[in-house]
Length: 501
Ligand code: TNX
Image (tube, rainbow, N blue to C red; front, side, top):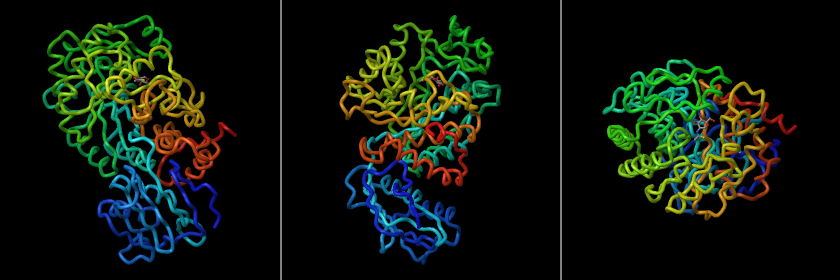
């Protein structure tokens, strides 16, 4: 059997010791922790064939939690003559260990096997997120679940759902039913839109939780709110249309926003809720309360990006109140980094940085303010981690405002080096956002996401240094991983590997 020296593991583990030869897995039995065992049983049956996993299979796969691995989400995976043993520090660690096992599966003439190996692994960062924008284009519950599968396989542990934007409101709110009336009936390109009922949202949360993924819901405020005005026109300002908006719409052959009508285009910065209207805050309080009650995770994202038509004073007035309403739900509020400029934000609020890997203007200063208030940062540098940037100029999907982002560029950044003068412990982690102006199906999304999502997975999980944390090793492992991704139904952008040829 010939396996490449570097095992096809993404993200690469903290420590891998190879033994000689391999352990056959043509016939296995899975024992131990019931939930993870059940999940692995169905996943292995799908990969190896239904008859491969039985109660009396030849090779034992033993799943356990502690003692052993000492770090949160860590695990130890041993494949030896005694079979395969995965020991998690906690349930999440055990689950991650099973993801590694799935990546180790190898088939040759003798059948399925995994190499003899001892892997001792744990993540570099606690927060490893992907974001799916379900507002510009709506994605069904089933598609969101497939997206969670993709993320969890790469050891991501947060799914940020961008639930609202100018083009659509996607979450049912009992107290304000018109939000998902006309406000959910369209999208960025004239499609039918859609929304999640509360049960739909619960189904997404439960599916994610079973894979140790925490859902982070976002209600984008006070801008990106045109869709609220379809159901509640009195709570949203007339569109603030600038010369830049007009020029952009003309260049893209897109319409300008009209108050109270569906906006099927993707200009930004023109919308705002009415900041001096008291009922606005009643709506926001109800929305955040209902969403918090549906969400078991600790975070509530309240947006704050690109409020280009809003004065600094109004933005501050609004965000102080919205921040307090979010904190009053008992959740930790999260906002895009622009909101850092506001003085009276709740202590401990999390900032999500979307500037470039080398910060421009006052982006880094705004991000630092979250840290100064006892919060932390999630880093999404748009010229590295944005999955919707085109990987090359002639790719059929994606935008390019932050630049063209080939795979190698996506892999080329270190979360500890982006914002100067913040302590290492203030970096909660990383997130790779997929904005969906240019994609409306999971297959189209895949073509932007894969393989670059793998780069962000490794940056979030793997140690900062080490021989495998190199472009040469990563590129090899991506090439090795593509067949398995494709076999699981993912439409991979294979040309991504040609960039560096
Ligand atoms: C900027 S960066 C946005 C989104 C767009 C995205 C497209 C940020 C927080 N906001 O509204 O969808 O660019 O790449």
